[in-house]
Image 1 (cartoon, rainbow, N blue to C red):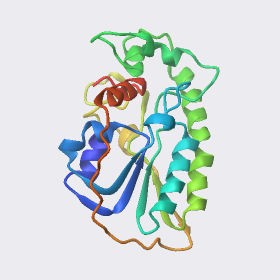
Image 2 (image 1 turned 90 degrees about the vertical axis):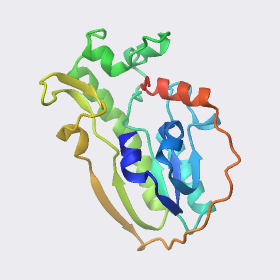
Image 3 (image 1 turned 30 degrees about the vertical axis):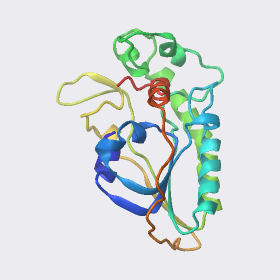
Length: 228
């Protein structure tokens, strides 16, 4: 949410198509008050993977490449979920534990670790996190190769995996709001060239007639570890 507000709030980006696997933009759309040429919600309908309760990176890449063909004169902003929780690992089951809880007191996966409700630590999490990131890399590369122009590969935030936060020296997990440690705010910035810059033009978007069901947004966010 903080990333969206800081980068897009109140902006008119009629030269940009936002291809997103994360429902957070729809959850906060009115407050952010940003206007893209188009927003493509990969997490809706067949873009959602029921096995892992996330959007797989290959699906995000497919939607991005389709968007580049449909909107040849627009910037394509592609928001993958990985390596964000849930992890992509067929051998792991503990990270789905919170999905089977109910009621108003449901807490997310990272707080289950922080509060001792899951008997795991950084040595358990890091292999899953890195494996999930490795799953995404080939599909990031497919977009770099498949769309001409200058690309930037970056991240909206990092992740705490048991490191101590400041000023209160508690061990933090996940990406809590209002915490600005180096682990959370220092992100990659990789510039790649594929036949120069993509020529873009700004055009007023067509009226958005699609209504996004709030219940679906809430369900998707809960599966992704958000409890707000």
